[in-house]
Length: 206
Image 1 (cartoon, rainbow, N blue to C red):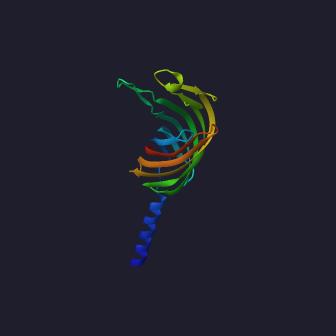
Image 2 (cartoon, one colour; image 1 turned 120 degrees about the horizontal axis):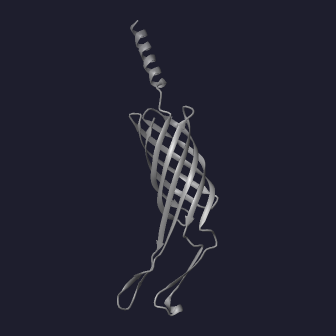
Image 3 (tube, rainbow, N blue to C red; image 1 turned 30 degrees about the horizontal axis):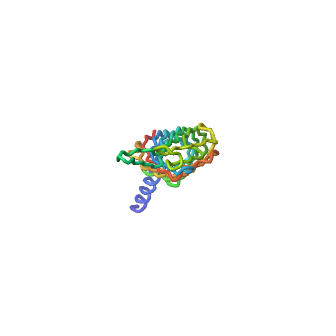
C-alpha cells in the first residue's frame, strides 16, 4: 500500500510539472554589436521584438530593428611648425529593417529557453561609404595637404530583401523577466552581411 501511494504521488507531481502552462507571448529588446561585412565595419544593433507560441516548441516573431556602423581611415599630417592635422576619412552606414522569424525551441521550461530562429527581412539602408577612393599627396599636387577623390557608382539609399538565422539562449525569472543572448548571421540582396553578431536580450513574458 505504501509503495502504491508513493507511486501515485510521483505520477501526480510529474504530471503537474509537465502540465504547467507556460506564458505564450513575450516583448523583448535586443541590443548588441555586429560586423557589417562589405566594409568590415563594427557597429551597434538594436531591435524591439514580439514573440508568440503556436505550439509547445514553435513560435513566430516579428522585429523592428535598427543598425548603425561607422569607421575611419586614419591620416595624420604634421606641418613643419609641428601643427598636426587630422585628415582621417570617416564613414557611416545606417539601416532600419522589418524582420519576420520562426523559432524552434530545443529546450523550453519555466526558466530556460534554448533554440534556433530563421526568417526573412526587408531593409532600408543609407551609406556614405564610396565605391572607390583615391588619396593624392602633396608631392603630386603641390598643395600643403593631401586631397581625397571619391567615386560613387551605387546609390546612397538602398532597399533590399534578406535572410537571417540565429541561435539563442534565455533565462526567465519568475516566468516573467527574460534575460538572454543571441548570435547569428544576416544576408541581403544588397550584398551586405552582418556577421558575427551578438546581442543581449531583456524582456517580459505574458
